[in-house]
Amino acid sequence: MGYYFISVGGSGTRVLESLAHLCAAGLLPNKEREENLYVMSIDPDTGNGNLTRTQRVLNCLNGFQSVNVGKGTPLLKTPLDIAEPFFWSPAKQGTTLDSVISYPSYKSKPVGKLYESLYTQKERELVLDEGFRGRPSIGAAVMGKTATADVESAWSNLIQTVNSDIKTNGSAKIFLSGSVFGGTGAAGLPTIPKLLYSIFKSHCQSGKMHIGGALLLPYFSFTPSAEQKKNVGLFASSDNFLTNTKAALRYYSDTGGSGYDSMYFIGDETMLPMERFSIGSATQCNDAHIVDFFAAMAAVHFFCGDEGKHCYFISRSDDDEFKWEDLPKIEMYDGNEVSVQERLVQFVRFIFAYLYIVKPKLSGLANDKLPIHDYPWYKNYWKDKINAKSDDVLNFGQYAEYFVEWLNQVEHSAGARSVEFINPKSFSTKNNTAKILPEFFSTLDYGNSQVTTAKIETVLARGERTGGIISSIFRRNQNTEDFGEGFGLFLRRLYDSCKAN
Image 1 (spheres, rainbow, N blue to C red):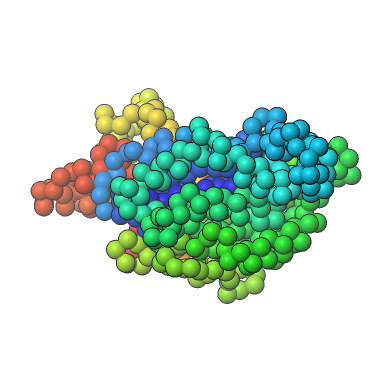
Image 2: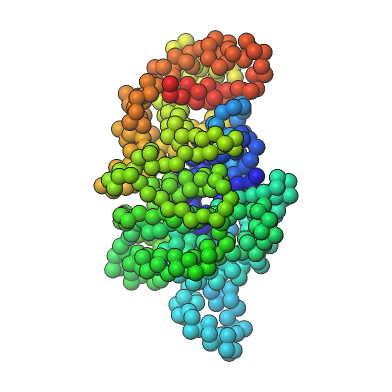
């Protein structure tokens, strides 16, 4: 089965950022290395700061995901397949609604008069390079018109890939995410599933393809200044979010889901104000939010869930806290349930351990500026085996920093409420660099795992033939490739040493 995720608009790309991290942590339900996660983005604002930030995470993951970590591990078990090109823009540069609709051809006809009554002149002449400015009626018209005509784009490549996947593997699941209260997401979330259903109607009816979506309800607000209101022209207004949401939900109710098999509604009654207002482009780069994380979890749930018609909502046990208990367990391909807490916390320890134990020492060790005998892990796994300046190593080190930056933003996204997933005291970020505090290692998820940095270093001090999983290979005469090789072997060893007792 193929897994497909389509982000729609700025909010959707932030969900994709969260999903990429969950994918790396091994939370997708597939058997290792046998199904890919195909990702693409739909956004007319191709310079969107959220899109750029998500792309950098995806590019780092893509840069080291081929390292051989062996078999039987959730680490990096789902290969990432980034669409080429990554994003589909339904509005080309300089496009207006008038140009998409070919308004001059209909100007003197009755249909042209109807068109004029539906859209103001400002809306019709708005250049769409930076999105639909909170006008989903514009976006829906543009997407519906250009999707079928755009034959050389990420959209057409998606259609070809899904067809090929179903032909080869028998089925596919497509998941979308975006907001229902803004512009691009509100336009695309009802439009794209209908287009997909019409294209893959026979597959949908036969049960070979299923479409799901995380529809984000309002969870933030912003207040432009009087000067900004005067100078930017049309823009999305958070004053209209609830009204837009009410209209959108009525539409989905009246149309029976509009092409979706499963729908997940996720929002937050506390609409926290954004630090800065932006109409789009590079300045629209908002921090990751707990709602993004839950929406990414919805995608994971959909990929491993049953295939009937469903409508889901999320709740939590405490009004003032977000806890691990609020998250569902995930069912893997073999029917076994996995604790999100256990798997994600092990991955967090793994990233933290790399940033605390390994990364700060690599340059000095590689250049013989530090005594190798003081760092057995380097002597045992790196010396003459791994190039510390290789693309795999550099990309992984950068990804680890991005992961901690994302985690820090999620942990501080709930305002006066607390997010009690990972203890914020265990780490911090400054100038895009993570600082890891080892004294909190054993309790970073508010539990008591007894996993310390000293214990991890002790495990890594063992050579490939002395202790742990590596020595068992030789006792059973198994192929060493089952446990990885080179940089992948080291990552596997480090990851396994971070498992709670």
